[in-house]
Image (cartoon, rainbow, N blue to C red):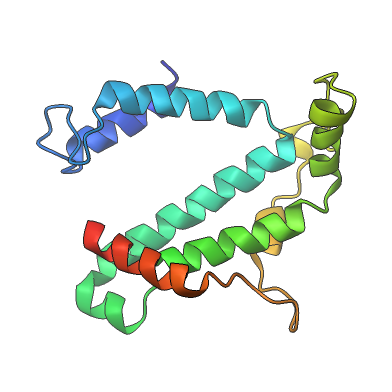
Length: 168
């Protein structure tokens, strides 16, 4: 099992997620979680180096926001929640990244390799993780230019947010 998967499984067992006996309060045990993580890592490894860096930095930002919110406590969280804590913030963040990402060469090359030529041999640029600009994720997530529009879920937004609060 990859070290990353082992660390996540150990973390979930010791973080109060369930009773510490390997079960998680939402019905997913460590074995299922490890299988899910293995599949996610395999999918990530098959993506472009740029997508790998963007994905890992995105989840690092989500984790940092969650840690900051937990440290601030409920009263401080309500007064000034860090970005990416609410479902609305996360969805808007991912929307901005997606809008910008589909216009980048890696996305177009992936479409070519998978759907157009169907050779499944994308020629990524950059080809290696070390060549990827470390600041690409924050630039993708930056606010969209004025007048561009943003994510508007309308009534669905309100219903989804209400449902997510009931899960907490």
